[in-house]
Length: 336
Image (cartoon, rainbow, N blue to C red; front, top):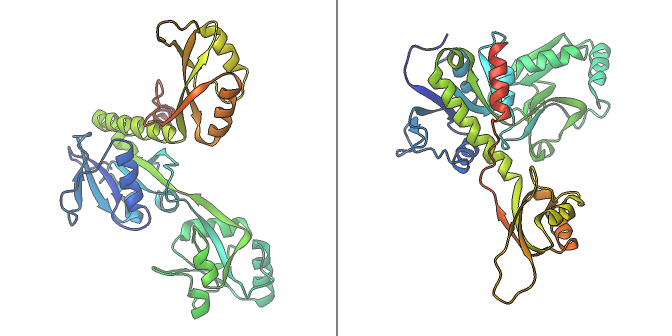
C-alpha cells in the first residue's frame, strides 16, 4: 500500500558497487544529487525540486519500493528479481542503466573436476545420496533455477558477507553468487558451471505501481526521470560529426550520403549552405550527422570518400525522442 505522504522519494544505494555509479549517472543526465552533509541519509536534486533522495542498502531499496515507503529506486536487477515479490507492486521503468554489470552464477570448486554442468550435480547427488548444500544470498532465484534443472531437493544456506570461502571452510558444497571480473573466483579456486548462468544483471530504475497510478505528481516525476536518463544513455552511445562538402545542391549531397552505410544520421543529415569568402566560385555545404561511437572510424572514411573535409567530432549530451519508448512502456505496464 502506498504510504500516506506528500513527499516524492527516490532511493539510491548508500554504499557498495552501485552507489557511485547511480550518482554519476544522474549527474551526467543533468540530475545532480545535492547532499551537503555526507552523513545525512537525505538529499535533493535541484532540477527536480519535488523529489527527495534517500539512501538505503541496495537490497533494501526494492523492498521499500514494493511496500510504497519510497516511490522510485535505483538498484541492481539481481536484487529486484530476488525480492520484488508476486503482487505486482513494482514496475521496472528502465532495465539497463549501463553500470553495475554482473551475472548470478552457480559456482563449484575447481577440485570438482567431473562437475561441468548442472546435470553433473544431479548425478553427484544421486551417486552420493547426499543433499547438495548451496550457499547464497539469492534463495528464491537459486531454488527456482535448480528446480528447473531437476535439483528440487537442495539445502539452501543463507550467508552474508563473503561466500567464496564456503566450500573451503566446509559449510556448503557449492555457491550461487554474483560474478563481475572472475578474479575472486580464480583466487579462491572456484569456477562457474558451463550452464550455470542464472541471471544477467545491471543497475535498473524501478517504481511503485500504486503511486504511479494514484498520484499524478509521481507520474510526472517518472516522466522527467525517464526523459533525461534515456536521452543521456542514448546520447552516450553516439557522437556528432560536422563536415564541409562541395556539391551542386543539398539534395545532391544527401544522395551521396545515403549511398553509404553508416552516415545517414538519425532521420537523415542536416545540410546547410556555407557562406564562403568573396571570390570563391565553389558551392560548399555543411553537413551535420549523428553516428554511433563504434562506427566512428567507418563514418569518417565514408565522409572522405564522398568529398567531406574538415571533419569535426563532438560528444552528444542528450538525444530526446518525440516521446521516450520507456515512458510509453511504463504507461502500458500500468494498464495490465
